[in-house]
Image (cartoon, rainbow, N blue to C red; front, side):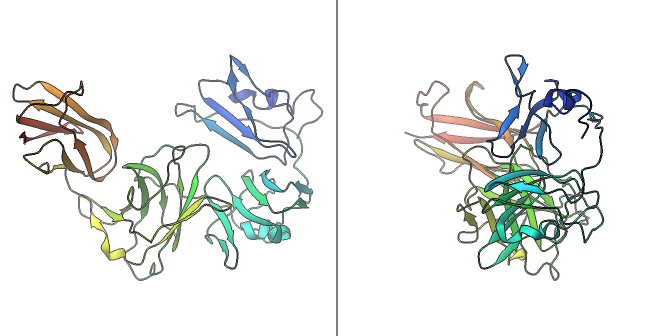
Amino acid sequence: MNRTTDGYIMNGNFFDPILDDRWLEVIKYKPKDSPEKEIKLVDDEWENLPDTVSSLQGYKIMMTPNAPTDLRIITSGHLQAPHTVVPLNQGENWLGYFQETSSKPLDALAPILNYIDLIQTQNWTMVKIPGFGWIHNNNWVINYGDMVIVNALQACSFSWNNTQPVDPKSVAKATAFEYIEKMDYTPFYITIPDAKSVDMPTEIGLYVNGVCKGASVVEDGLIHICAYLEDDEEITPENTNLVFFYSSKSVPQNKSIYKLSNGQLQHNREGFTYYSIEIKDMGHVVPAPHEVMLSQNYPNPFNPSTTISYSLPEDGLVELNIYNVKGQLVQTLLHEHQGIGTHSVVWNGKDSNANPCSTGMYFYKLTFNGKSIFKKMLIMK
């Protein structure tokens, strides 16, 4: 990098083209021998602008959804020498891959494979399992300019190995699902042993608590989904579905739902958190509903509570309201974005002021993507 121009390699000057709170949320980095640091706006001042930018350093940059697509950081200087020695601390290291040629991860890091147990990029994570080896997909490639996180079991150093270069390759983005990307993700691995003999989906979406948390294009028997979970949110068989998308289907609804079963989901909490499942029953997927459906509440009549179930043919905004026989709004049970599939809500028989409703007929109304459905129910005390 340019070390001749005064101040050029300072955060403030280098990142100046994107230092605008209209489209930049935060820049994170982890200098050697230092904890994680951030460039973010605090009290109208950007923090950590005097720090030095390094070619060896990896950076995470989170832009706002409305950021211009033509933003560029123009750099000057000379290419980093290919055999530059990169020092690693014990623990997590954020690295910049400055080799001009792309490489398979296990080749690029061949000199230190015995000393690391995690390799992570923006789109995939490799984890080393004792006695098993690396969980990885053969399609994964590290490209020029990638940010790579490496966890070292001890302090060591290496030079990027580019003796077996490959063609650059980017991870294809799923287009059939909508989800919100975050700065960090939890790896979710899917293994399908019979991938060559079954009707494989084109994409798979991961739904947790009725919301799509990530999706992946299916290219191999091992599928990796970046799960953008909320803080303290976990994936369980009870709260999680997989949605299969088939681009070749000729029917109006080309999605199917796969429900995780007990004992199938593996959750690793030791060392690095990740989830994994093996799907051996691809024939047990359930076709997604073709249209919104509202079931009769159960039990009915009821006292004091009842369950209302409904099915959605796609993701969208759902509103569920309770009305009395005069058409007056009694309670709004739901007003939120939910995912494809079947959902249920319990009504405790109380109004919006938490007062118990009297015996009588009530109506529940489901509104989804401009369509409304009414059904009757009876409170009997």
